[in-house]
Length: 218
Ligand code: C5P
Image (cartoon, rainbow, N blue to C red; front, side):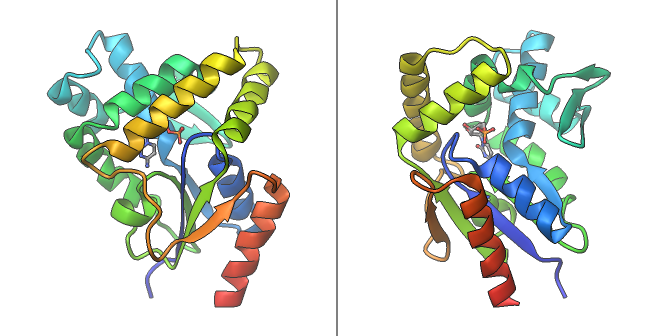
C-alpha cells in the first residue's frame, strides 16, 4: 500500500506551515515544507551571484542544493538560515525562482523522497496537483489577504525582523498573483481538495479539523 500523504496547499501566510507541522506531530508523520526549498534556492542563487531569472543557472543550484532540515531548523551548507529564509527578500525571490519550470523539475525527486512510512504531511502550492497527485487527503488552506498579512506581520515582529503592514499586504498580493497566474504548477483549489478557510479559525482549530478528517477516512 502506498505511503499516505496529506497535501496542504494554499496562498502565503495562510498558516500552512504551522498547521502541517502540528498535524504531522499529532500523527507521528514526516513533514515537508516545500516552500522552504524554494526559499533556500533563491538564497543560494543570490549568494552565488546567479540572477533569479537565469533559469539554467538557478536550476543547476536547485539540483545540487546542500539544504538540510532538522527539528524546524534549516541549513544551507554549513550555515543556519532558518531566519534569513523567512525575510521578505527571500519570500519574493522564492516566488520568482518557483516560476521557472526547470527549477521545479530539479526539486521534484527531492520532495518525493520525503514520502516515508508511516506518512507525510506536505505543504506548498502544488503538493496535491503535481508532487503528490495521489495524496489521500488534499486540503486547500486559505484566509483573507488582510488576515494573512497580519499574521506575517506578527511572525516577523516576533523574530525581530523589520515589518510594515502596508508593504506586507501589497507584497503578499503580488506574490499570490504570481503564484496563481504562472504557467507551471499554479496555485489552485483542486476539485478534490477540501477547502479550509482560517480567516476566523485559529491553528488549533485547523489542526483538529484535519486530524479528524484523517481519522474519519481511516
Ligand atoms: O510557502 P512559502 O511562502 O514558504 O513559499 C514561498 C514561495 O515558494 C511561494 O510564494 C511560491 O512561489 C513558491 N512555492 C511554490 N511551490 C510550492 C511551495 C512554494 O511555487 N510547493
